[in-house]
Image (cartoon, rainbow, N blue to C red; front, side, top):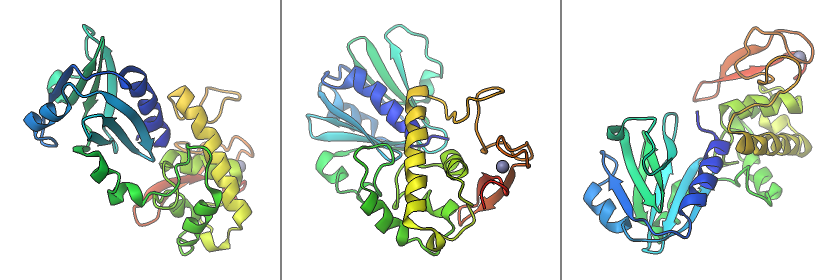
Length: 264
Ligand SMILES: [Zn+2]
């Protein structure tokens, strides 16, 4: 599932081939876009900026139009050189943006919109986001204020609320709480500011590694590279040997993995 690190990584790669370049090839299809209009609005425009905000990816152009992409579970951006064989069927591509020898191609993204830049930047889906876990400097005071509004939730649910902090998904939720030694089932209200900030700095650190690495790897010790807790239900804790637990958590019933012994 795309988490914030995936989006930042995609933004970085798209920026490297699109920013400052004119869109020579634009091909749009699918129910998300009025294809003819999308092509008309984007073709010949120069990409001014590619940015990630939480799990949202924005591509701005000098034509005053921006592309808003959210990948949810299945969406992906690929980069291909002209002439490359695509890894997915061309029929499944929602949007192809070509500049020079590169094409950026979006497949299967559930949100893909073209909007006036000024309107998009006022869009509540973006303005209501908390500070991005991967953007420095990070505003800790703003983060704490937003987390305290969620005091009734358990920390394992609160830390995934994009209105409190943007970018943390299900994998990094479990991993951050494990590494910080915090029980996911504690109520947010019962955590000190210091504990909340330790979760925050842990998440930033391991997700920065994820941006460089492409994979959500948090554990590189003995055995294969992998994770401390996520996806390891029933396997021995890498710190204490107790079995890693898994249970659904929060209104969205997302799986949380933790060690009862190390996180208490
Ligand atoms: Zn343990």
